[in-house]
Amino acid sequence: MTPATNAARKRPLSVLAFPYPPRVSYRAIFIAVVIGTALVLGAFLINQRRPAVERNQPSAALVAATGKCAECHRRETSAIIDQFERSKHAAKGVTCLDCHHPAEGQPSMEHRGFTIAKSLTAKNCAACHTTEYDQFARSRHAAPAWASVNGAKDMSPEQRALGERHHPGWVDRAPMAIGALEGPSAVESGCNTCHAIGKPNADGSFGTCTNCHSRHAASVALAREPSTCGQCHMGPDHSQLEIYGESKHGALFAAQRATFNLSADPKKLTTADMSVPTCATCHMSGLEGMKVTHDTTERLSYFLFAPISTKRPNGDRGQTEMKEVCLKCHTRPRIDDFYAKAEKVVLATNEKVKGATDVVASLRKEGLLTPAPLDEPIEFTEFDVWHYYGRTAKHGAFMGGADFVQWHGNYELLKLRTELDRNAAELRAAKKEKR
Ligand code: HEC
Ligand code: HEC
Ligand code: HEC
Ligand code: HEC
Ligand code: HEC
Ligand code: HEC
Ligand code: HEC
Ligand code: HEC
Image 1 (cartoon, rainbow, N blue to C red):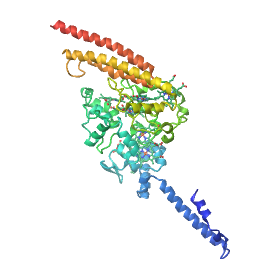
Image 2 (image 1 turned 135 degrees about the vertical axis):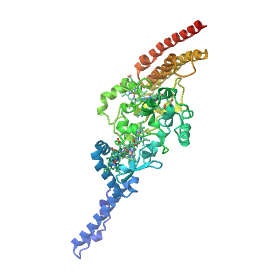
Image 3 (image 1 turned 90 degrees about the vertical axis):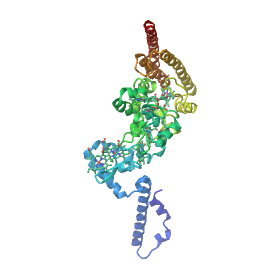
Image 4 (image 1 turned 120 degrees about the horizontal axis):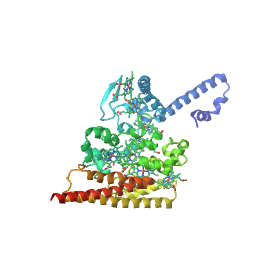
């Protein structure tokens, strides 16, 4: 009910019936009062609906803030204004300064009469999106992503502790040897460009939210696009994008995407909006009453990326949650059968990888290899076995990529094993000759 009709209903009849002094002027005064009250009340209600941060700041100055930033930046960097204006943020009255003002612990700078942060992190978004940030911060996208390349040396004790609490052993660890061998420029513009999704920031937070949402569009449609995850999840060591592309899901998505509602409100997402899953649907979305999660680790059951894959500590729960997603669109027997087959691929791949790494381990024991990593050709063959083809076979089995289980996975495993055996025999023969 609007305030105006509410007020009208409560209007006392005796006042309307009063005949003298002249009816018109009383009526006019009364209507003026009612309309005036309604306007004040209406303005109050509209104000209530604005984000709290906005209400708590002097609103004239804030209007001036976005207005002034936008006026000048429309000339200087017009694409940013265009992106911002399409966003839900602009529609809901979030201003430039809501994000750009320095959060606690962030260096600031003076900029055209305003104080803004020198650079922004996930902390600036966390001010209004605590739930999403907390889930993100406990996921492998946070501390473990950075530690897998750089170890824990860049983290504060608090950052290290948070990571270790959720991923024991995966944060306090040595950096992967290959980074040191390739050198800092490769690490900076290669490894860390992807792994900075979990970079420990000086303000105490991890990473950035913009890898998936972009900086000014704050788009959920973008985050639901397979190619957004595919910025990092691609290539022979983690071919998720390619596997998805050849799966039935990927083929259907490509064919039908124009009819899907990729911008659907995450809290109300149904299979009517998207009847085919993308990466986000399976790993993050709150499909039909499930909860959205920014902890991409939650629905997993195996450490598939590891040379030998074992079950995760909360693997059973993870598997139940992922199956719950599948079951929004599929029947139970099909999904149980799919998982059973994929688990067989995991076990078989473990055997094949172990066979290969055992060959190299015994050569090392026999003194035929140096202790240093990746300084002999056979060590690259061993690395390719688990890092490329073992992973590919396992990922292919779980995400519907037959070609990746077979030709990019098992076939290569078979081929590399014969290469390894031949190289091992040659090394042993060469040693005998030397004696
Ligand atoms: C009178 C014009 C003007 C106004 C007003 C203005 N800016 Fe800028 N801003 C610029 C120009 C010009 C640059 C580019 C400087 C350069 O290229 O080195 C810039 C750069 C920036 C940068 C990048 C800084 C960096 O070091 O990378 C940010 C962020 C920014 N502005 C945000 C804002 C925000 C937020 C507001 C409003 C609170 C605002 N600006 C108001 C003109 C303006
Ligand atoms: C939802 C939060 C958010 C809002 C709202 C927002 N920005 Fe930004 N903006 C960012 C983030 C994040 C970055 C990246 C900063 C970084 O990397 O340090 C950025 C970067 C920029 C840059 C530097 C761009 C470049 O490529 O060099 C400019 C200029 C800028 N913003 C202006 C604005 C203006 C003007 C507004 C208002 C019309 C605005 N921003 C609103 C989050 C926001
Ligand atoms: C001042 C508070 C504030 C800040 C800071 C802020 N947001 Fe938001 N954000 C909002 C509001 C309000 C909404 C709209 C919520 C709604 O409609 O339910 C929103 C919505 C969103 C959405 C959902 C959009 C949709 O289409 O449903 C995303 C994604 C998002 N924000 C990302 C970000 C990111 C990333 C940052 C930091 C770069 C950020 N936000 C910073 C207040 C904020
Ligand atoms: C900027 C790069 C980047 C983007 C974009 C990205 N990821 Fe990741 N993702 C990573 C990295 C790096 C890791 C590995 C973390 C580690 O070292 O364990 C990872 C790991 C994961 C994992 C495995 C988590 C675990 O516990 O092992 C899942 C699932 C995942 N990402 C899903 C997604 C989805 C879904 C999207 C898109 C909505 C996405 N990622 C976008 C970089 C990215
Ligand atoms: C194109 C983006 C990208 C680049 C470049 C990249 N990674 Fe990754 N990395 C990923 C993604 C995505 C995963 C997650 C794979 C999965 O879970 O299947 C990952 C996983 C890992 C893992 C296994 C997860 C863990 O926590 O142990 C390690 C270790 C790793 N990367 C180290 C590196 C190093 C070192 C470099 C550079 C020499 C590098 N990465 C370059 C995207 C990248
Ligand atoms: C790996 C990619 C990825 C990263 C990183 C990411 N998001 Fe999201 N976010 C998504 C996806 C995907 C959705 C939509 C889920 C769905 O399909 O309903 C989403 C949805 C949202 C929403 C809307 C939630 C709702 O219930 O309405 C907000 C707000 C949001 N993200 C904020 C953030 C913030 C803040 C961060 C950084 C701490 C962040 N996101 C980091 C992928 C990401
Ligand atoms: C139909 C649902 C579905 C879709 C779509 C999907 N995945 Fe997966 N994904 C899975 C399942 C199931 C697993 C294995 C879960 C387990 O460990 O039990 C998995 C595993 C992964 C892992 C492996 C983590 C590890 O242990 O190494 C990553 C990373 C990942 N997915 C990213 C993606 C990306 C990126 C996309 C899109 C290009 C995608 N997924 C599309 C269901 C899906
Ligand atoms: C949003 C709905 C949706 C979700 C969630 C979903 N799928 Fe599907 N899936 C489909 C659709 C639609 C098809 C195509 C069915 C057809 O051919 O009519 C399909 C096809 C498949 C196929 C290929 C079947 C064939 O015979 O070609 C497999 C396997 C599959 N899904 C497994 C899974 C698994 C495992 C999960 C969960 C990890 C999952 N799906 C989650 C909608 C979904």
